[in-house]
Image (cartoon, rainbow, N blue to C red):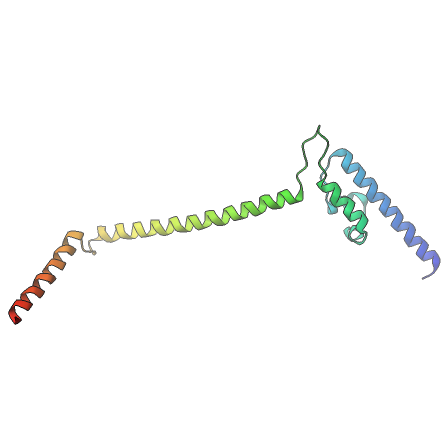
Length: 146
């Protein structure tokens, strides 16, 4: 590449950096949410520009986690939102497991109720009587053989 092209690219990069810094300062003063995408949009640069310039990216991340001044409500950090999400997902898994457990118990109870109401299942009294009959028949058979 010619030196003119290289100089032009450097000048363009400097202008983009200045736009990013200006947009970042403006967002900090306004107390706006600071994200890479939002800042890139306001500064009219591609997000990859920020990712290629680590010093700018570090400034963006530092500004995103910096609390706002005392007169405004504290900004929610990405880490706290991720922690809230992880906690909500864990709670959701626990509640889903509890729902499955309760559904299983309900199904068993309804099944037992339907079985006993249908008359197909032996009542507890009848079942005890049948066991008694079997026991007495064995005793009788033992006396006949013995």
